Image (cartoon, rainbow, N blue to C red; front, side, top):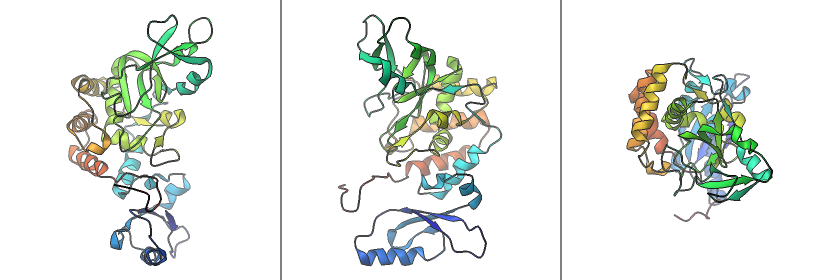
Amino acid sequence: MLQRCQSSTSRPPTRIIALDRFPADDTEADTLFDALADPAEGTLPDGWGEVSPWPTERIRAGDWSAAVWRAKRLATAAARYAERETLRTLASAGLSSNATGRQLRGAYRPSTAGLAGSFPIMKSKSGDAQKHIEGYPDEHWTWQRRGDPPILSKAGHLLITAGQDPNTGRLTAVASDNKYAGNGWMPITGTRPEIAKALAVFINSTAGRLLIMRDPGRKLSFFTYSAGAADALPIPDVSDPRIVSTLAECWEATRHMVVPQFRDGYTEVRRRWDAAVCDALEWDINEVTELGLLLAREPHVRGVAYGQWKA
C-alpha cells in the first residue's frame, strides 16, 4: 500500500505501508484507516504492519524498492549498497546477461543426454534442484536445424536466476567450470571461471540478495528478473585480483555445501558468504550479519485474499 503524506512541504515523502493482515470487516477497515491517519512511521498499532516513508527524490528517480521489504532498514541498506562507489554495474564490467530461456522456447526442443546434437542446460529452481552454489545441468535440449546451436554462444560460467519464490528459493546465482545456457537461469557472458565463482558468492550474499531484490518484477510472491535488470546489478570490481581470489576461494570452500531454502534462516553457508564479502570489500561484518538476520525474518508475501490462507 502506498500513501502520500500530508506535509507543509511541496514534496512530501511517500509512505510505504506493509500490511501484515487485511481488514476482516468494515469495522476493522475503519480502525486501519484511523491508524494510517497518524503520520508517524514504524510499527502500526494492533498488529497491522509497518510504515516506512520513502524519500521523494528516490520516488522521482523511479526507485520504489522500499515496497519490497517490510523492514525499512533493508530497503535503506539496499539503496546504500547500490550507490557505493566501490561497486560497478555488471554491464560496465564488460559482462552481459542473456535471456536464453526465450530462445529455447523457439527453435529448440527438449531432448535427452547422449543423442546427437543435444546439449545440457540449467533449468530447475525447485526445492529438489540446484542445491549447491556450484551449478549443474538438469536438462538436455537440441536445435531443430543444422549446424552448431547459436544459443551456445550465449552460455556462461555464471548464471543468475530469472525468477524465484523468496520463501522456498535457495540461490540467486550459480557458477561452474563449464559453460551452460539456462531456462529460468540467465547465463552471463564475458567471465572466466574464477570471476564467475567470485560473483556467485557475492550475488548470494546478503548484500547481493538485497541488490537483486530491488527490481522484483510484478509479484512479490514470486520475483522475476530481466536481463536488463541483471546488467544493472552492482558487483565488486572484478579487475581486482585480491577481491576475486578471496570470493572465489569461498566458492571452492562452500561448493559442496547444501544451501538451505531462504525460509530456513540465516544459515552457516550464508554466513560464510557474507564473511568472504566483508573480507574482500573491507565491509563491517557486524552490520552485514544484522542485515542477514533481518532479511531471514522477513515475512513471505502469500498473494492470497483475507481468509484464504491456511497455515
